Length: 301
Image 1 (cartoon, rainbow, N blue to C red):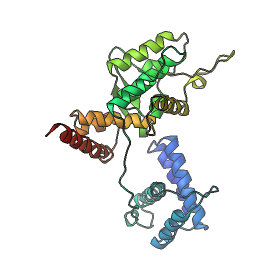
Image 2 (image 1 turned 135 degrees about the vertical axis):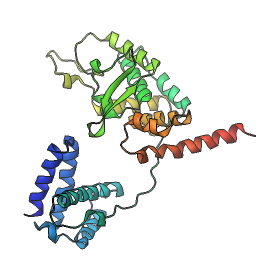
Image 3 (image 1 turned 60 degrees about the vertical axis):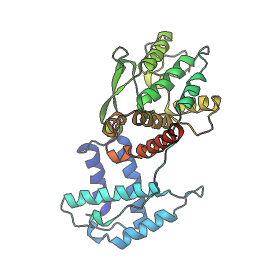
Image 4 (image 1 turned 180 degrees about the vertical axis):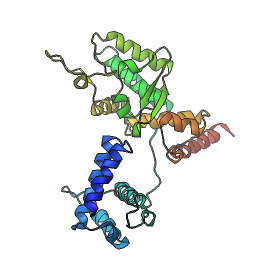
């Protein structure tokens, strides 16, 4: 069989046996289609050589889209990761092909993240006008993001019935549909409670949009979108006079950094964030080392 046929089998394997999310399958489909298009011929797996892969990587590095934009190194690596996963699948099924371990990922610059100081967090919260119609909702969103470290997609998917305000905890499914328990601060729980008391609807989503319609909307039509959540965070950051680019993920970074600075161990932070690898969490140790040095220089004379 040819590579195209095996790719089809591999994508079905990801969907069924590996139970990957639809988004993951969609991404792998996109990356592998680009590889097949580059080859311009439907070769057999055994005919795939390191030179062909090298030429493909040159193509990715020089690629320009219709707007003249290049692919970042990280995006190029995603293409290579998909290809290596496909080759690993072939090897596992005793199909002769190029060994996946022969393909190395490109080295990427050390990742940096932006975090907010405690003073900036306070200014962000204070920027919400609770006298306005959506004030209590927006305050609850900001407090929940900072209190839990949720990803924007996880906040977007939250339903009212999920959140136990008495115990101040709930379960979410993050990347790869992995479940984890997250905890609300007392302050965040109170903000959510105030927001829900204002609502007189039966919609399932925890956070809903302000759209009005004479027709009864489905739950998903009333669910606040990811883009709307991002816009809410950005709007209040500007209102608070914060110069940094502030997104829901900035609040997630700030949450993790605050935990580590206050003495949380990195394994616990890994679990709270839902990271599958400790390596992902270790990026925050660079931030906390810097903050600890600043504290030392400020207070130790």
